Image (cartoon, rainbow, N blue to C red; front, side, top):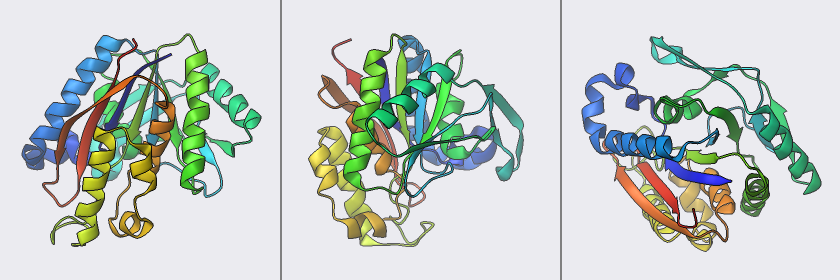
Length: 264
């Protein structure tokens, strides 16, 4: 059963030993993540599924990273002190694979021991003090409708399970909101962030689908397909969306949102 769902950013600057003085500029985001962490702890998840944009991605298939154990590390950012180990939910991964085959949804398995920052940053917060198992997953290069269909099929797997399952969409919004942004300034960045915030506030799948492709591509975002999948998981559920924080101190949009499940 689904007991928790959320959207988180995944900038490594949220890791104190990496962000250092920059963390002060992310105070709203960090506080929102801490609140989300507390909410997840109270929800007592047995499994956390994380959809990220920086894992190994396939153009023609959705994927799950299946390994005997995972390690969160941020060595590429010069941090050698964090070396957190997590375990996979082998049973649920097998159920997901069977369901996707039944639905004829392209699906494959990868195997990487190390979790990149796209998955590692949210789990650095959310897996704290938990003994939950992990399913690191990645979206595909398939069209938007397929991402919704994948989310809907995943919803069926989750609803049929007696495990307490959390689903998290990990990614950042536009990377071009100011002239100091990583991709420079593009007006589509603000348009994209505004549209996504409205879609999340209203849990509006149609608003996401109607967003012009040129705005999506020009915004430099890495959080679109993950939300489509999440909306598929939340389809027909009694949900109350809540935006916990949004800020863009470095020209990149960081969103933290929770979808409260009113039928629990």
